[in-house]
Image (cartoon, rainbow, N blue to C red; front, side):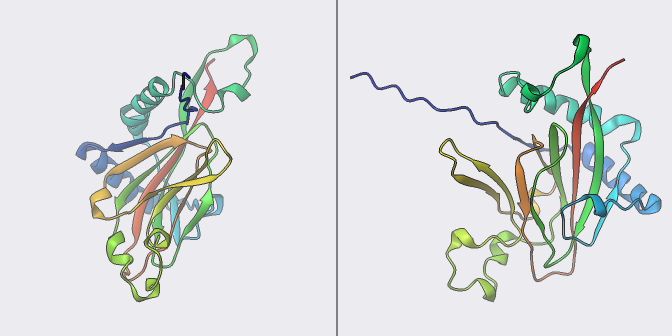
Length: 216
């Protein structure tokens, strides 16, 4: 008897620790957003206090970070972009990518971002300030007598379906050690952010979407 194990392909996502130059740039454009004050909250699923649009000056973030990650994703995903099979372009016109939206989120205690997905082809999330430690969150009195796997205060979580149709989750137990970390993923990969407790400081993160456009 010859037994061969077959593992179905699963679309990956990328985790990357950003360089200081990039982090400094992101804080710069966040400071700029405080002056421009363009509210973005009405376009989001997040039940959070504040969200503002960011401007990528001279496409610096797109060129320095997004383009290399798109290349990496294509390489590790057998050269196929998610959702490409559903797209059609007339006359073989050339397509490229652009950063269609970029914003900063301010999440305070008890606020949350429910499970949702994004528009476009790729999306990303960047943690810049995490004012809590997941391990400390789990010791709060409200979580007494709970199974550890169900303690999710302050977590970031992906949700996906396995080959049998079951719902699976990948959780990030966040702490300050994740500041400067970016997750780059297919836009339709559902994710959420659970509420945290015990601090008045905000959790500050950046998110964005990338989509195709037709090159003239």
